[in-house]
Figure: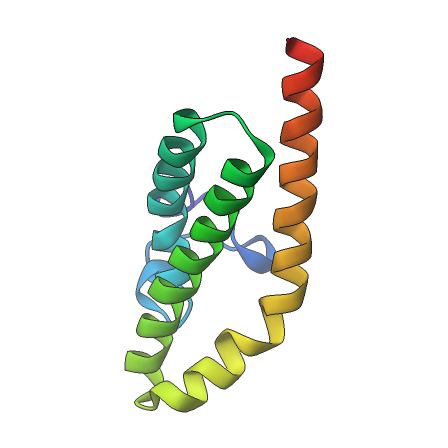
Length: 110
């Protein structure tokens, strides 16, 4: 939707140009991460499995994003410092919240 121009990216922006910019790797990683997280989560309904799936998703998004940002900047070390390190703590917290929510929903549905 964002590639088609709908304003779903940061600052209500849209367009295919955002997929080719410095943050394009992060954006392209989301569908891949969602597929992997879903695949891992379906294997076993447990807190630990949800946690592993969630952290795998975060790692995939960081990996794609860091690689694209590193190519764009020409410096992978600096790209890691500005595109990954500042976000690790908050993303782990968000992953844990997602896991706790999924675990609660699982219990309510059972």
